[in-house]
Image (cartoon, rainbow, N blue to C red; front, side, top):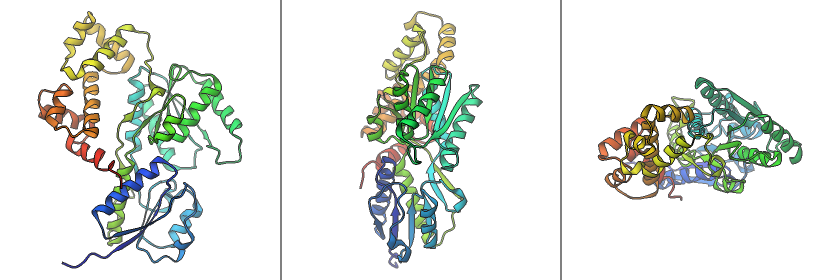
Length: 393
């Protein structure tokens, strides 16, 4: 069998954010499985220009988080197969691997709806600065409106990338936050933006999460725990994005032409923190029902058990629960069970049979069917994706 040709790959990915570091872990995982790769890499921040040596570098391919036009030109001038990991400039014609914005919007809205919220907003970077984030905004707005609600939008966050003082930026964002109808659930385009929203709430003396619940994207632990209060965020599966981008680049270096211009990777789940720890209702019956379901979903409870525990008719409880959360009693029980299954799959080595019993399923076959209907993949597939990429380099 002929020896596989070594591949020299430049990884131009920032280390200043958890998202970039996660991608690097995914690339490292691919390298461990494909030792013919040699990666040229240096720690850097997002937006830094590619290193000078890239111009005359005799490599085979590039993985890049293209953040600006100058960086894009430097990468394109190499003439090497390149995979873009940011998607800010689709007109470049580079194949892009990134997050599935439609699924992100669905997860964010479901999380906010489960807290009884009926008023929503999106906060992101200035329109036109990043096409991928613009799409994230559009997906959230469309989904909110498809569910019969309206969505306020602010795409004026600069994150101090322009000549603007922090006070000016905060004053402008605080004014927007204060103008929103309350209580409101805000989806921020990423953790950096979410941190600015929470700072603006503090600046405007708006209570979080009682008046404003904030959920962001990326789950950068440093940023999410730096905010006050700590911020809920969606795990964007950056390790898998890095791994799949490396796999795509390997095929391109072997002469394959990508069949798709963009590859959208399904995100993980919400890592809930205090910024969304609320329930937008004064209905004590609904509050008690949700608490009972949360505490006993793993005991195999059914709809009748919840109704019996609350001492009201099924019709009464069903109507009031759906008015607050948009969920039926049965779907809420299943939702909590599936979230518990996800947690155990990703953090333990328990066999599926034990997980099923702990989470209220009598049979593993039933668990597998419900899990696949909910997530689009089997429990084994989910465990592989959520755990293999967390091992780190």
